[in-house]
Each structure stands twice: as C-alpha cells, then as structure tokens.
Image (cartoon, rainbow, N blue to C red):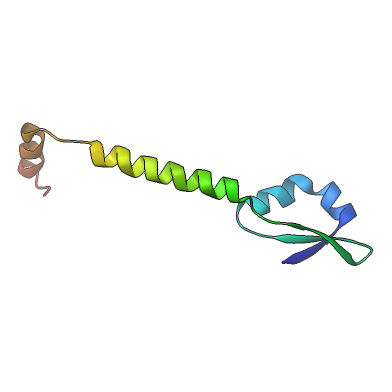
Length: 78
C-alpha cells in the first residue's frame, strides 16, 4: 500500500478514487502516523462479477437458425 498524507488525500481525492477503482490501495497518514486504509470496495468487485455472469448467460441463450448457420458456412466461417 502506498502512503499518502491527509492533506494530499483531501486535495487529490478524485484522482485517488480513480486509482483505487483500478485496484490500488492507500494508507492515509496524519503527521506520519497511519490513520486509515483506502482499498477497493468488495461491493464493486461483486457487481463486476455479477455483470460478467449475466453477459455470459445472455450469450449462451443466443441461438442461431439453420439458415443463419448455413450462411456462415457458405461465407467460409465455421
């Protein structure tokens, strides 16, 4: 975890939050003393996982007609 002072955390909060969203973690310090850890939310990770599962299920439900399959075969795709 990277350490960041409380003043810098306050003034650069939007940038820090973007970095946390990509997976980085920070320890916020006050006068050199660790005060809090800023880590990616488990809820956000859960939502991304749920969205990926839903996308896979949607793709799995997609069915092609025999005519569409024949067209793909004729165009050289298998």
